[in-house]
Structure formats: structure tokens, C-alpha cells
Length: 211
Image (cartoon, rainbow, N blue to C red; front, side, top):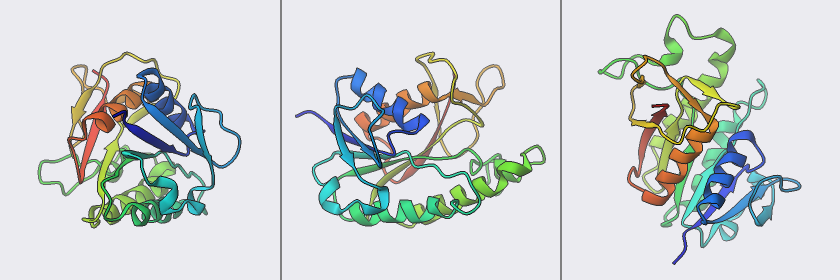
């Protein structure tokens, strides 16, 4: 039976590329959007994330959460939106894959220091990193949901090229052979759909970096 995937916030930069990757592989993908659908999905649920019901998401094998908020007043929505999706999927077999952040990746083996706490981390991004880290901490407490949190590399490039390859990492910031922490949205989308298909990291945070 064909895998059914829903991409929430499919009109965003990451969402659109994730939908395209799924569609290009011939997967059955539905875009969840607030307004008109601008993604490659042929099936659409036109609803705000917070208006979604359990019935809307019933029947999907995987729900991918591509929600993003950037302004100070909307940052708490990272937590509330994720909680809403978790509550809808609680106790079901539907997997929840989350487009995460890099700021919460650890930089030491003891997992006591994170990227966002480093001296070189830009002050402008600290509130966003903190909001996303809080959402991840809350997600980790959900044993009732088959979640996977996918952190990008530190330099997450919206317009970066699709190389078609990536390195899969875990909880720690992973550098490639050139000492870089970088990945394009397009290569990140490949990793996300690979995880959707394989489902091998239930209730884990993984990370990806360009090869």
C-alpha cells in the first residue's frame, strides 16, 4: 500500500521542498495550508494548523511538521503548535516528523553544552533557538507519540543547491570532511523523506549535514 504523507505548513520554504521531494518519489502527499496551495501536492487540506482535528490527520502514515515562526510575539507558537499536533496524533500509529533547529544540538559528548550557548552564536537568533529548544524538550516528554525531530546543520541554506547526498548525525553537531556544518533546504528535504519512508528513529532527534 502506498505511503500517505501530510506536510503541515506546506507553503513555507522547507515545506514546499519537502512536498516536492515526496511528489518526485511518487509518494501520496497532501499539503496542509492556510490559504491557496503553492506546493507540488495534488491533494490539499486548507486549514490553519491550530484548526486541524484528529479526523483530518487520520489515515496518514506520516505527518511532517514544517511550521516556522520568526517574530518575537510568534516564537511561543513553536511549542503550542507542536503540542497541538502531538495531541491529535496521541496514541496513533501515525509518525510525526518535525523540521527542527540546529541551536539545540550538543557540542560535547556529555550533552551539557549546545550550539546556541557558544560564543559565536548570533544574538539575533538566540530567542528563536531558545523557543525551538523548549519545543524539543517538551516533545521529548511525549511517549504517546511516534515522533522524530530532524535538526539541520548550523548553516541552513534556503537557496542552497541539491547535491543529493547528506551525512546523518545524532544529538551532536556533526561536521563534514571540510569541517563545515551546512546543508541546503533541498538536501534536508531528501533526508526528511528518507526518514518518512524508513521510520528508523522513533522518539529520537537526528541531524543532517551536507557530505
